[in-house]
Image (cartoon, rainbow over all chains, first blue to last red; front, top):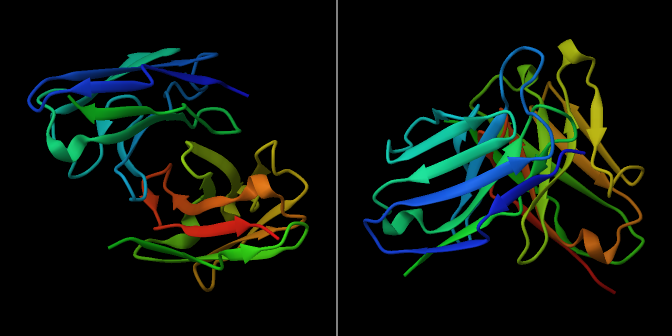
Length: 112
Length: 116
């Protein structure tokens, strides 16, 4: 199974600052069709998860452009510029390239 | 509007069975692969099962920790997906989410608590 490793485990930021989360996979996520099925999912406290970004860098509908995703092969990054209060919660990367799909352990974004 | 609504959770004794359901609407259910993802209390997300669509022969896949005990199924005529959980264990306690579209759509989850 592909292991997804996220760092840091938690991140304290002030409103208006930027935040960056790293996700590394144990093997390349580039599928034979040339696409990379690395997604970012966000969960605010007490809520269901919500996908923010799919295939590394494509924003889901309604996701503000303060969010961006970059990376390739095994190294990926989620960046949030100008953090807002509604962004506080847990972020997970997950891979959908090779079954079984796997999630990273999560990164908790907290208020400084 | 896409909607997924799980049901069937509750308090279950160890060794017993429970069947979870997920009712969907707002998308062409029969085209989509459907997943179950669970979350133990205070823990992260764990993918547990998938059922693919008719074009992929309704193939099913399971996470290592649940293989042999969980069975996923679907009813395209009713836009429903199910998760049968047998020989339930304390470590199966958690919120079970139904999700689809490569994790684009999620339900609100149903809580399963395993305790005697």
